[in-house]
Amino acid sequence: MTLLDAPEPESAPAALPPDESTPALIAYHLARNGKGEPLGPIAPGEPPEEGGGFIWIHMFRDSPAGQGWLHGAKLVPVVFNALTADETRPRCTVHDGGVILNLRGVNLNPGAEPEDMVSIRLWVQGTRVVSVVRNPLAAVLDIRDEIARGQGPTTPGDLVARLALRLADRTEPIVAHLNERIDTLEEEMLFGGTENVSRHELGDIRAMSIQMRRYMFPQRDALSTFEIEDLTWLTKADRVRLREATERVTRLGEELDAIRERAQVVQDQLMDARSEQMNHQMLVLSVVAAIFLPLGFITGLLGINVGGMPGVESPAAFWIVCLLLVLICAGQLILFRQMGLLGRRKRRRGAGPVQIDDPS
Image (cartoon, rainbow, N blue to C red; front, side, top):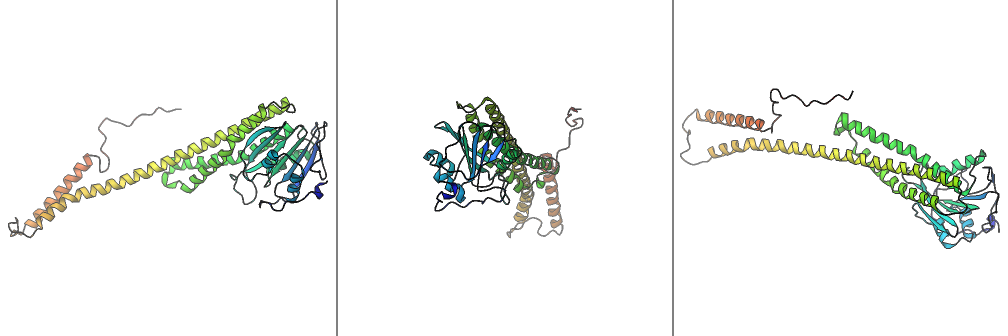
């Protein structure tokens, strides 16, 4: 049975369709010297060749061609379910001499957010690698370009390592841009004050770093597990490349951790500044209330309509009361200033500013 004769599934979840640069299904025969030869329609049940390299079959899960191949390949249920699952997280599972491997890469498709990371599901054997995606992945195009130049992967382990490294290559600019954005916010906080810091920008940086970090460390663990598994078809060179990919992913995860923590520090500074501003406003209101409280008490006391009020018959009593209120107000202002509630206390003579050593 050929690929064209394979039955199509009744329905499939909607996903971003492949374009002209990313066919729905591709297959290569990759030799040990890195030369790759495109293959025609591959029968789903056709056994992989023994010796002389390996076969790489890549497809879009939701395309008719991809669904037809998957349903006709007679894969064991564990492998089939792993390749067609709707939601995946990076993982590595050894099954019957092969490896089920899920990886994630940043979403660079038009109109998509980079942090909405695209998954690639792999079924890796000694003579065949099957990879399945729902949306186009730039790392796959990079591998195809290498094959076109005659510098393709030489072993299944080399293919996985190259995919992991290309995924890291595509992620690094996104992480570097996040670093630049948080650097800008920290400079605005340092030189321009909290009023110049965009809370929306800060929230976006935190959300992106948290969402990308969710997959970085599981991906590191998946690659590390794959590298240490006792697989006869995994060469020493493959393990070295996988270790390098693991270290790259680890570094990206650590940078995302640092970005998240720096964003949290900026958020804490914003909250502290806002709290300090509110405290200052409450202090001003309290001082104003404290100033007018005794003044209001005196004027209220003198305004009661009972007999025996002093100064009722004196024409100078009003001005005496006004002078008394002014003196009380002035006394309160002096007292509050001495208590540090108004302005700043004068620095004592001889008490200069704290000296800081010049680092130069």
